[in-house]
Length: 305
Image (cartoon, rainbow, N blue to C red):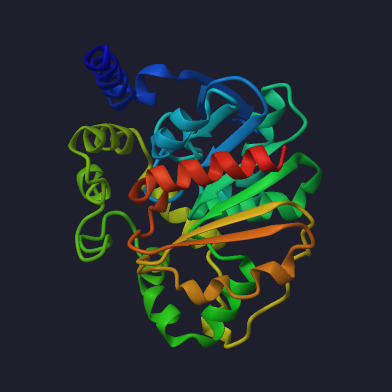
């Protein structure tokens, strides 16, 4: 009997290891002011909307989608310009108001009035701004490796290390995808953009997704929205005060965004604020520490239902 139980357990674990959101999600599109926003969804229950950053696409959230789908309807979008979403011409179409509008369009398309909003990197920037602009549509807010705008502005204005870490963004703002050294000293191609993905099978999917993406659009996120605090030496105006349950993850090996930006996050939110620092994880904390992020997110969402 013990051997049988062990065998069954091994088979279950094997099947779990083989589970892949790629083969389990349902795909759909929402219309957002003339742009089609593609999303992938799994599960049923309270709505959780996940927003990827640069350079990425919906598949970044595969581990979290698999870990939450039994209790939540998890919807991961492709931001405009990426993968299967619309790619409108013109930098002005990638201003923050359009990115926020895309998230609202997906929530409305799904017949809901609000959702838990989860964002990483540029998706984190969109999630912050979505919460400031449309707090009534945010049940909970989860941010991964993108400090609160107040903390980010402060560090950009006065932290020499953060200013140096942000040099790549100035290259993106001043350059174009055709520049041969635009992407950290190399060309911007589907292959180089997917270079950070360690899993070989996942990397193939990233290369395909980036092959469908618009590199000019990716850079337009920076050209239209990147903060300029380091140029003025001033932290800039304070962001609106929040009153939303807030969970922040930060991989401490992030070489672009300094962890000092997390300081005082709790002062800018009147509701509960949980900050999780993750040693050993880099900028893509949702993949570098997938199990920890998924388990913590699941526990936290259940506690805040």
